[in-house]
Length: 605
Image 1 (tube, helix red, strand yellow):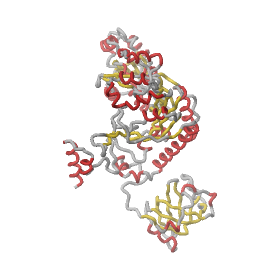
Image 2 (tube, helix red, strand yellow):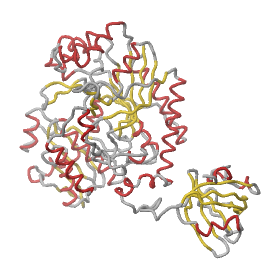
Image 3 (tube, rainbow, N blue to C red):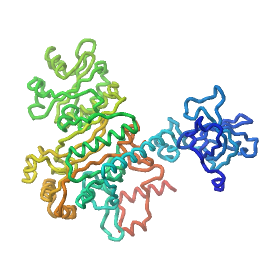
Image 4 (cartoon, rainbow, N blue to C red):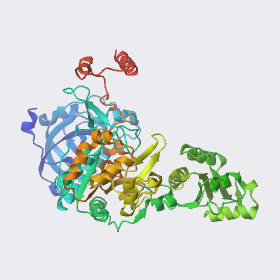
């Protein structure tokens, strides 16, 4: 540690340039590579900002420790910045025109042989996660975390300039069901009672509006105990925003300004006015409420044209009130039977009973269902679906939701497979007019599409207030999602600010008065004391950074992510706790949990 009294870093390695030639600098960092040329040792010294070549003479007393340097040693050195000799400039790195001629150096920390090599593309994901602290040394991850930092600073500045006040809300809070499972925390001082880690600060930010904060924001941590995927983690960061005396247009306009600021500052791109599309139009055209507009493929409804077609599957589908949807895909006419079977499997994974395909290859149409139609009628089906020579048409006959889900999955897959997506640009979209409620067959009740604090559009208010549950499926919400490249980047709504409307909403969701009071009594009471009309939105910060950083894996923009099983491979978390801790909390493990603990302890020994 005494070395830090002798060496005080003057520059980052990556900041050296020809403007500093002749000046003395003090650098600290990691030995990226070492090349021993006998009387001279060449080292590429690396820190967060980049690397620079250093020349050391181990025969001189002040730099003799250079002979002991190894990769990933942490060193400090002092030296003079020189121009590289003619023909020795390295144009691959920003500091390639200069080098540092060391006058003294010291080893700060030695390193054993690393289990993974920094910036090695061949390292498995498992090893990267286990040795995350080593993987974080890579230029790839560091650049993405720096992008995350820049995003957070720009967001804070923009929202502060907008008049929003940053307010922190509790992490230990009340379990308020909002869709996903809560992570529960037992209370030691009140045995049998639990806190919940917040899925979002929804009720809290609305209470801030009741409290007169007017405009609020927070970059907060949220927790949801749900299955993971590439763009989802059990704990995540959210840009949370709420404003009083505003409507949906006010929120969307303010957030478009934030989009423009971020894309201009970080990508140098001017974002035009963001288009708006209703939920119904998005589903009809793309089969998804978060369509990737860079993909030109669109769905076609064939229900009317195929009514009474004579083909049993199509006729029965229309007769029971379901739909027939088609997707025309250019260039897919040459697909083999094996490739078609793979696409059929994908459609079935989304709930479809099957997939009808018609392909145009070598001037003719080919399909397993061709025998059920005459040539002219079959050609008309292909043409009506938008099929072209050399292309293919895919048809799903099922419920609206399943048909959309299956063809949307095909649209996304084939857009990538056939290189149809314009990856050189980002396409944003506002999706509006979502259903307020959707029926859950499993729970046998209506559930909130977004959350139970979203208000209904004015023209549907009477239906909600009168409890006309036969019409609940037609209710529209004052809700809006911000979509980018097929990802939901943010979502929000105008909130319920009347106590009677909120009570009616809970009733529509099947909550008894006793249940409502137990779970939301504090919130219902607060609405009685003068609540301003208010609205808000929450951005998924991790997903936003993922898009701006140009990656499709959310773990790339999180310093210490979890796996698909919500575990931390580096720290072996979640882990076992001692029996004494459980007893203190009044907890006892179930049979399966005890078996898991016993197996884990056996592995340790």
